Amino acid sequence: MLHEDGDETVEVLLFAASGDEALTEAFDRAERFDLTVVNDAETALDRMRSGEVPPPQLLLMEFEGDGEGVELLQTVKADEQLRRIPVITISDSPTACEQSYDEQANAHVERPADPDGFDEAVDRIESFWVRAATLPPVTNDS
Image (cartoon, rainbow, N blue to C red):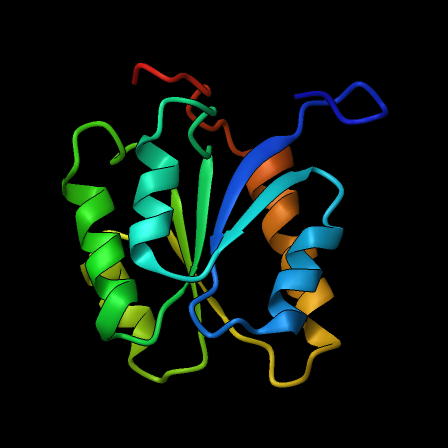
């Protein structure tokens, strides 16, 4: 998909289990993200595997080191169809960084302490993953 200035946008799936509005709104404001938000792992997997819409090029996810986040990350990285999707975890848990890398996340971002910090964090994510990194192509038959 093209952004209004002709540059490509990135298909992003945000797994926001907590329903944190500050997090969701900050990612939604990102200029280069074509964002879809889901609040449970089953819906995230359905969205990634549907074949009806392009799969995400980037999975951003809340990750507290237990529950649905861990299961979703493990499932994505074990699935031949999904494992190339880069996964960025976001958390304020002191153990989440290590655990997310142990589970093969591609990056971890510390959750900002105040809602205003989300825009800066999202800008840094967008800057690297959209402007610097080369992401897998969007295909329905990967």
